[in-house]
Image 1 (cartoon, one colour):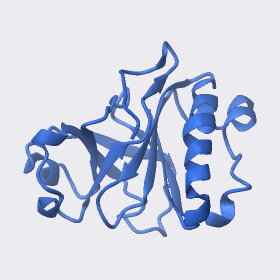
Image 2 (tube, rainbow, N blue to C red; image 1 turned 90 degrees about the horizontal axis):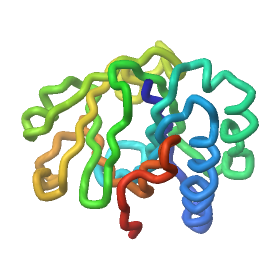
Image 3 (cartoon, rainbow, N blue to C red; image 1 turned 30 degrees about the vertical axis):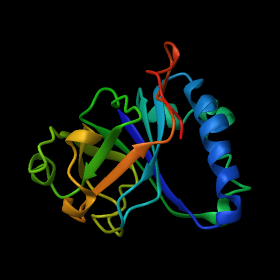
Image 4 (cartoon, rainbow, N blue to C red; image 1 turned 180 degrees about the vertical axis):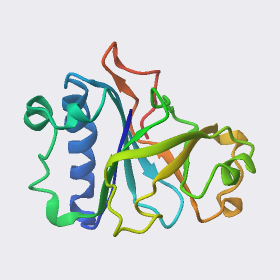
Length: 190
């Protein structure tokens, strides 16, 4: 299953420290939890979406409800909480493993259907929300029942000005960590 966590961060004087914490401490702690298979963090380059996105492959909801998750990686945001905005998380089925997105590639998400991505020449994969943010009081844009995910190399991706507002576009901030070998493909951190 795919577990996503999205948020913004409002305190620019602490944002670098927040990013170091999340990328260098939180992701490795999460990948050490039994049932976490991959973890990767992204930064938005399109408008209208949360600034940060973390995408994890996990075995299922029971992983997030377990003691090991709570002890090693879940919920250790107390010191950052005042500065975190637009926080949401969802658990999706439909994709067995999150894509390994490297520098020079984009991750694109759509909650309005696959057509927006296929018009850009991308091959979207459908995901269906099964837990977490399934709150009927939230809007479908911020709490979509379905999402489509696609990756593209930057050379193949159109200019952001050609991308519709219903597509969220992200670049990787970290390499994909995985339970088998620690770090995914070679990644150049900017």
